[in-house]
Length: 263
Length: 317
Image 1 (cartoon, each protein chain N blue to C red):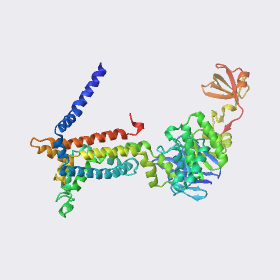
Image 2 (image 1 turned 60 degrees about the vertical axis):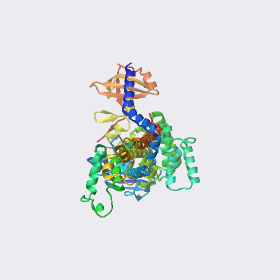
Image 3 (image 1 turned 90 degrees about the vertical axis):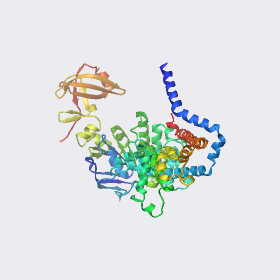
C-alpha cells in the first residue's frame, strides 16, 4: 500500500503544480479561439516572436562557441584560476535576472563605464543589442555545464592517439573532440534555447518594451495581461504558443538523448 | 629505424619520474621496457612518442634529433593500454584515420585498411563500433590503426595489461610473429616479466626512474646486474648474502654439510611443475620449484622435514 500512496502523492503533486496551471490556460485559450488567434496574428505579436527567435538564435550561437571553448579551458587548460572560472560560469544561475538587467543598464547607461556607445548614438539600451546581451548573460552556463563533465569523462587518450596518427590540433578538435561531446553540446543548445525564449526579467529591464520594436514574446504576454481590461484572450493565446514551444523543446530533449544514456 | 634516448630527465613537480636515462633501441629490434609501476617506463615511452616532453635530454629516431618535435612529425605508431579507440567511428574509420589525415586516395585507403583488418583478424567487423568489440578485438584494432600509417617505430604502452590472461598470451605471441614479419622497430612497456621475456629481443629493466640493466632476456635472468633485477625478473630468495632462484634449490631427504633443514609447509601442483613451500628454522619462508616426477620420487608431503641446497646462486658486491 505504501508503494501506491507514494505514487499517488507524486502524481497528485505533478498534477497540481505543473499540469493544473497549464491545463487551465489551454482551456481558457480554447474558450475564445478567435480572440486568441487575433492576438497571435497581430503584427506586433509576430514581431515579438521574430525578435525572441532572433535573440535566442544569437545567444545560442555565441554561448555554444563560448561554452565549448570555456569547457576546454576548464577541463584541459593549463591556466591559473580555472577553478574560479568554473565557479564563475554558474553566476547567472544564482543571480536574479532583474539584477542582471539592472546591472546592464548601469554599465551601458549614459554615465556607465561603457556609456560611450549610448552617448554617441550606438543604441544599446532600450534596443535589440541590450536584449541580446541580457539573453546571452542568463543563458551562459548551459552549454558549459553540459560539456565539462563529458570532456572529463572522455579523457585525452583519443586525442593523443589522433596526434600520433598525424592529426593537427584543429583536425583533432573537429574529428575527435567535437564528435565525442556532440550530445552534450546539442543538449546544452536545447537548454540554452529554452531559457532564451523564456527569459523575462532581465529583458524587461533593458529592452524598453516598445511594441513592434523591442518587445519580446514574454514581454508581450505580460503586456496583454496587464492591459487586458477584462479581455484575457490575447494573453492566453500568446502564452499558449510559448507553452507549446516549451513542450516541443522538452520532447526534443527526450529524443535527443543518446541511446546509451537513455534510462 | 633506431631509437636513441640520451640523458633524459623528467620531473612531475617534486617527483622525479626519469633520472638521467639513456637507452638505445636497434633498428628492427623488439625492446621491452620492464619495471614495476612508478618506475618511469610509460613516461619514457611517451617522451619517445612526443606525448610528453622531457625536462632535459635528447631523443633520436633514425639518428634524427626529434626532441622538440610534436608527435605528428615523429612517425610513431602508438598503442594505448586502454585502447583509445575512437568511439564514434567504425572499426574501418578508426584504422583509416591516419590515412585520411594524409589525404590518401580512397582506393588506396580501402586496400590498406582491409589488408590490415585481415592481418589483425578483424575482417568482417569493419562496420562495427568499438563498443561492440571485445577488449582483445579493440586492442587489435588499435594495433591496425597504429600500423596503418606505416610507422618508423611502433610503441606499445602496456598493450595487453587490461586483457585477461588467455587473450594476453595469444596477443603476445601474435605480436612476436607480426614483428618477425614486419621488422618494425618496436618498444613495448610492460610490468609483466614473463611478457617481456617471451616477446622481446632486448629487455631494459627500470626502477625508480632509472635503467637498472639492458640485455637479452636470458642475460637479465641469468646474469642480473643487481639485487633489484635479480628479484624483479623472476623469483629469488635471499640466503645470507647470496640470492638463489626457486628452481636452483635441490631438495634431499638426508642432510649433507652444506644443506639447511626446512619443513614442508605445502606442496602445490602446477601441472608439470611442483612448487614446494618451505619454512626454515628461523621462520623464514622459501619455495622450491621441482618436477612432478622428482616430487613423487621423494614422496614430498606437508609437515615433512627435508634439506635444501642451492645448486647455483648469485652474489652482488
